[in-house]
View (spheres, rainbow, N blue to C red):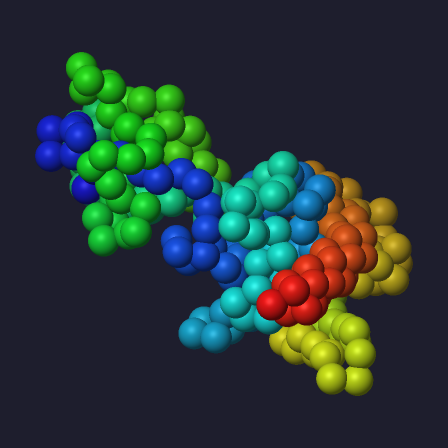
Length: 245
């Protein structure tokens, strides 16, 4: 558990690179950040292989270890999904006395084996006097969003499932005869079924705050063209490097 005594000199390298595990084709995302995520990345659903429950992902590339937003100079996007931006921090739980009642409260934990951890480089976690740094305040907000997003996700997917809005989708991208990608196991919102919902169903979804989420997921798919263009540029750059060598 993070504390300002044991970790008073802790620093975190905040830049992004493959050496920090950022070269991923997909990352988890949450309804609480859909508004920011949909401006940059396509949002899809997939089923958790352990639980079978739906979860949201942002698509970053067409291969498991391909992040088209990442190069040697960093991560090029106006918004980085919270699950990445949180760095080496995560939410744990601790029993605490709150107004005379024992409650299970969320607390911040830190993975000291994470490659971003440093004693000499990066953002300080605590101020010299022991208070939280601006960096830690930002991380706290990100973790709060993830914590809320986890709770919202289940209710949202239950509602989408109840109204039959989730449908499977195959993402097939062909660049040439030798290079083509077929992404299986993805789901999205059915626009046809969404348009066919009754007024009462739309009102219920909107009242719960889930209707906007459905529209944001649909809107995010416009980023597929952007991702394909980024892939084309990456291939051209790699071809240029190969020709030069």
